[in-house]
Every structure is written in structure tokens, then in C-alpha cells.
Amino acid sequence: MKFPKNKKIYCAKCKKHTPHKCSIYKKGKDSMMAHGKRRLERKKVGYGSFPKPIQHNQCKVNKKTTPLYKCAECGHVQVGKAQRLKKFEILNK
Image (cartoon, rainbow, N blue to C red; front, side):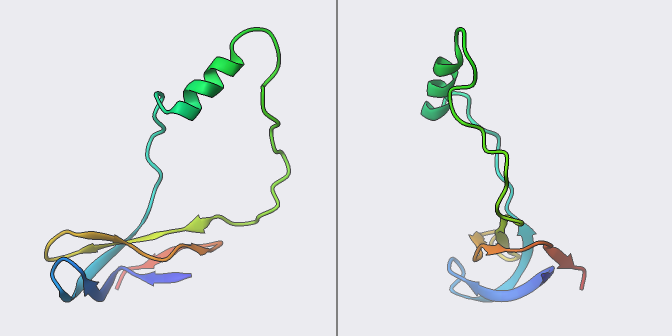
């Protein structure tokens, strides 16, 4: 799907329609101190195989892509609606 690089949408901080720059949301680095990560590391210690079943067959073809819109005036970032897309293309207009 093609997304425009700049789009004029409503900014909740400015309380008016302003130009926004579009980009893709990317996941941050995982925290090593998260409770689930600590629990998995504790399970993996010692003799034995991986404690949870590893899923090999992928049933879904594509992943959800979330657009981010950054206001050109105040810099406020708002999250757009996530969609299942094979291709996320930002047009240079």
C-alpha cells in the first residue's frame, strides 16, 4: 500500500489540522530484565531442550504494519491504524 510522505491531519496537541510526516513504527530493543525474559532464562538453565514448543509453520503471510505521524509544527507523534500489508511504501511527494 502506498502512503504519502506528508499528510495534513488533525493534531491533538495543536488542536488544528497541520502537516504530518509519515514513518513506520519499529520495535525497540528487548529488555533483558523483563519478567518473561527472566522466567525463560531460568527455565533454560540446566540439562534439557528448549522449554517451550517452537512454531515452525507460519500461517500468516504478512505482518501488521503501523504508521507513525509526526507533527511538523510541535513534533507530537501519533500512531495510525495498524493494517496487514505485504508492502508498505512511502511516496516522496
